[in-house]
Image (cartoon, rainbow over all chains, first blue to last red; front, side, top):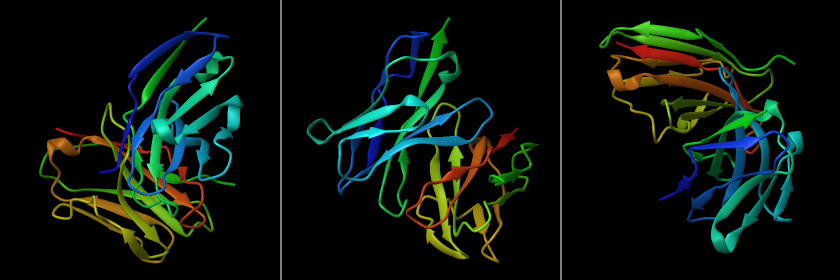
Length: 113
Length: 113
């Protein structure tokens, strides 16, 4: 069955430090992978997505993610975190037509001054 | 461009009561999604519409949940009767076409007492 695992429930980093959020997936077909961010009281916003091609994907707000098929991972990274990045981050896997979207449980990011 | 609109933003009901949520997608978006997000979990897709037809409702609890998108624009999601475990945020999203980026509304927070 399709599933997404985000091993870290909560991560705290200092402002200016680098960030990596982990995501592992289990999917029978070719996966389409997504990272979303959710600020308190807000809907989800797409950061980036991977369908095919270059396994290093650039997104908005300075985020990037790398698809590693051998590890079934799609980790999100940012070289220097800003206080405004504090939010909940969700990894998701689905099909080309957005069918069967499965979200991970999320990782809450706290940014220390 | 206006985003996805949802109402109400908050709703508190007693168990066994009925409740309805409304969603107005971004203008011109053919595809509409309803998700349920229980506290501490990622969103779960309930139903996906393409214009006024259902594409995927495999995870919709059809004994108590129903959704419609009669004119292919706005949509309503109904729960009848509500149970305690239905307490969640109900998110609506839309995309231009099936495979396009999903844009999320702010959600409706339902509390069932």
